[in-house]
Length: 488
Ligand code: NAP
Ligand code: MG
Image 1 (cartoon, rainbow, N blue to C red):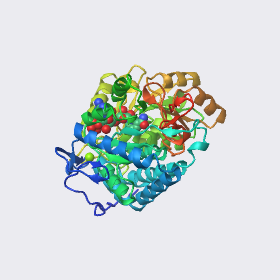
Image 2 (tube, helix red, strand yellow):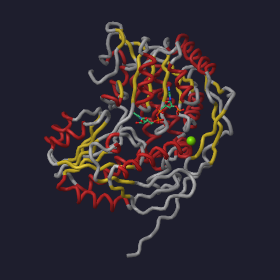
Image 3 (cartoon, rainbow, N blue to C red):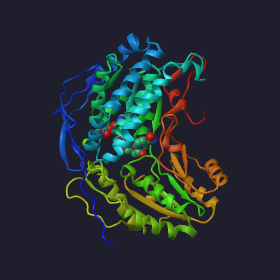
Image 4 (cartoon, helix red, strand yellow):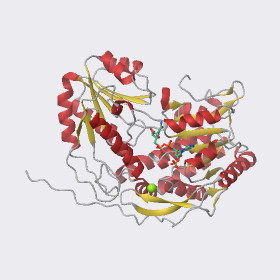
């Protein structure tokens, strides 16, 4: 049979203007940075720009600006007026959506199809959703006279740069806090474009401050005495360091950390749909997703059928230029992350699991890893326990539902899980037994600003999104500080 190749369908990069060098965004304007480091397009290794490396004096200036803005403007403003600013930001993000999408794809390596259809619309949706909350905080059982903490220090990772920014900034501002945010080292550009949106929306100076830099910059922010609240998304290792740093203080923290989600397929599942769900669960965003369905648990009697169909489907995944609208799997975000994926995959080989990838030609420059599955994985294998954070799926099997739950919960994490079955009763039974903050049934990786997101065990503290997420940014007069958390 004759098949036609897809013709290239490149999204133009002419819509974005990238400066050769950026400073920090402090007190409503851009500073001139002192030292800089490069940010790359990971698909080509082209240097896109030079980003300022934030030091202690930059963090000081940003925290001071946030404090003054909190005391003089933002804490005095009515919720209704704060909401107006958030609506304005959301609308500008929508107007500039293509610009954000192209810039995110360039700086991060993710396919334009995803930045355009997932990251940017969801980021704007977070601002719309939280804009609606700003004047209703007194009426939502958030405690007596709920009020903000003050200055929130926020640190985000590189996998969803703009989306993680909006998960952090939108609820903080809606609740009346001001913020100092540090983006990840490899992906600062959309945060700096967001700073321009704040200017365009005429957000009062100092309400949002962005200090770019490395892990040291993040640590300086965490340890700054002027911070009242920390919100962090990233690795469990850094999350633990933050928990230790704030232990002797009264600072409250929300920590969104790693995951090793089980995607469980029972033998009554709709197999074709479930194959799509498995692909979406692990290959969306190159598998750089904390809640990725990275452990596939197949009921033994259907394992061969599911794997055969999965391999046919994986052979259709198009890997290549992230700016091409046909691309399904883009570049790995950094050389460092690629090394980590390669290392853990080699460990999988050495432990006796069987590796399979479809034939695919990877581009010659940039950082790439093919869609990969490991079969014959056992619970003791490192690739069944550790987060690979790449397009690599570990496949295990089970015989009984009870065994599925036991294997699924046998992890230090507990962020998300998936259940595939045609029986509602089985889905509800499994959901009650799974120790995971988010459980999807007959679907995977669905996100909504109204839905709380967060983990059990080493996946973190507290929730982001929905009413639960707001509690992390509010104190109440009667109970002291309310912590957003799984017990609420
Ligand atoms: P990471 O190394 O922990 O980095 C996250 C952020 O923290 C970055 O901005 C990083 O700066 C900064 N940082 C590094 N060291 C720090 C320190 N000592 N003190 C304060 N800040 C510090 O994590 P990553 O490798 O970039 O991100 C991947 C991890 O994030 C994965 O484990 C993933 O599961 C997790 N994640 C979780 C969620 C969730 O919602 N639960 C969502 C997305 C990702 P630099 O970039 O400059 O190093
Ligand atoms: Mg970059």
